Length: 197
Image 1 (cartoon, helix red, strand yellow):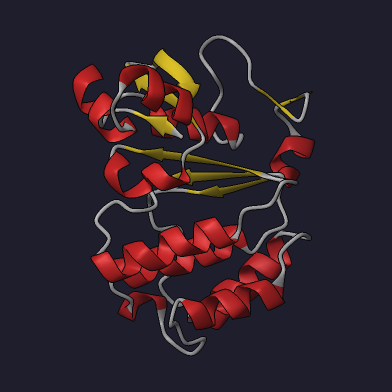
Image 2: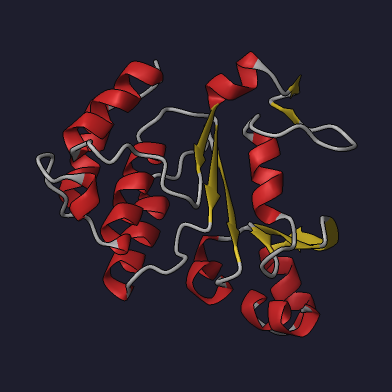
């Protein structure tokens, strides 16, 4: 996980890794490749903002992703919709923020990507949606892929974290294996976050 306060550079980093922004300095490689067409094809990015068209129904969003991404797994998406308690005929404009969060996560995790970039997937989400989102992320874990979550809501995602980067003003100020940090510091990652920031 990339953890830090609002404005610390988390979302900017993910946008760069997703190939949406150019870095002002330095370089990012994914799967030992410089950012480009290949890396875009293996990265599934979940932005914090809403990116679906207002005219869409959920089934339109699924078809949009299926047409856009060769690795989109329609069966996985339909199973996830059922778990998330979403109906294909619902209009995206009728969805609550929590339900929209569930849909966006379903779309992102239904790709067979090597790297999933999740930007604040729990921000402003109700408790029921939060639990469904966390469960879905845990269930999507595969040794063939990595999931990178950016958040400032550490308490809720701590059980998902195996390695953490603390980011402030675009700089990593602390990084390490989550379990090692807990043991060395004698506190949870959430408490450590509060101490660092």
